[in-house]
Amino acid sequence: MVSEVKAVSGRGIPVVGNDIDTDRIIPARFLRCVTFDGLGAEVFADDRKQANGQHPFDLPRYQGATILVVNNNFGCGSSREHAPQAISKWGIRAIVGESFAEIFFGNCVAMGIPCVTATPDAVKQLQEAIAATPDLSVTINLETLTVEYGTTSIPVTLGEGVRQMMLSGTWDACGQLVAQAEQVKATASHLPYVAWSKLAS
Image (cartoon, rainbow, N blue to C red; front, side, top):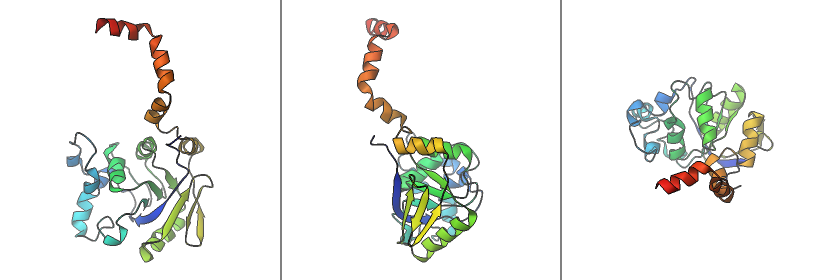
């Protein structure tokens, strides 16, 4: 399937700190949007304002990064799906962290964004390596469950069920429907209430 996610490669961006909640990722005032378009520009809006241009998401050396590296309990707080949407709209395609809040993790899976976990020491070393060399190439390999950068390879974890969904592309519910469009039409043609709705219209 087109939706298969086997590996994600790119430059990294480190956001250091534990318990970064969804209100910090995308403040509540931005939840009134009708679509998620434009949320990328507002990701970490308040943190970025407080950092006065020094937040990683504002620094020129991290622009174009696709792999976010975070610490413990990332995405805690409210269940708003706007948080992973904002991160994705900014350009992030995968996240490495010590741990993730469960609902945030699930929202990322539904978008095809793998969130893999590593030990605190490994995450810190990766964050420091990216800070020292912003153009460092980082690869998250879901087949081998490793993150590779420079000459370093670290083991990461991802629940086997989620890993298989990523590898097979079955995380993408809409994609599965489109891929099976003919079978969906065939099934619908035999459903009495679908025929009735056509007559009623």
